[in-house]
Length: 272
Image 1 (cartoon, rainbow, N blue to C red):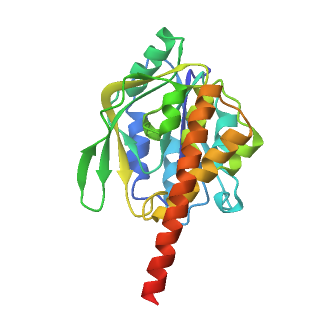
Image 2 (image 1 turned 90 degrees about the horizontal axis):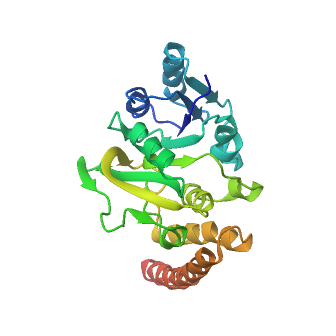
Image 3 (image 1 turned 135 degrees about the vertical axis):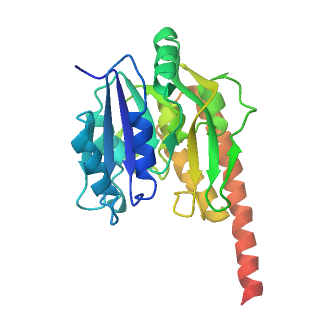
């Protein structure tokens, strides 16, 4: 039977976390069929072996196990390998170091989208786990339940492992070259619909030293944001109101980058 929903998971060197991630998928209680697509980008630890072990026990798994690291070749897994495999009407996202905590997560989100055709995607609240201090923190609570594409353009207030979206989007070739994929994906997918953020806390987002954003310096962070925004403006793929928000944000971050560049030069001067 064709799955109604495709869980899409990407992993790399996450042997310490991947079991908790996969168990979060298997605990889901749904009235509809699902598939579990897991992409491993040639991990050098036991991540791929663990994924294989789970796939042997459950035929809902679809594994994509790379022999060479694709990210280092600037080939991104979502657009090039994972999404083309997804058969579901809906896609649920989770990375290999995060995990779900509520067995009814997928059911609640799919039920909402099935009953609200004017909504493009459905997310929820999350606990943020700071591995260094071993403490949990709540995510932002000052975001309305219902928001718009233009509102999302101000900042990404959706954690990737909370999102279920309709599998009705098209990603152009340039998407694979973006330094950040989740926020642009949500913008592209939600341009013709509303965004729901349920009040329920149904997953954990992990912050650790090996995370994509962990340890990144301020200059690099600002530069990455600019490189993410620029193609969205250049290729004019979003509604006018959203594009105008991004243009304003782009100018703001250009100025931030200029100021941070001066600070870096001053620090280097006094440290020599």
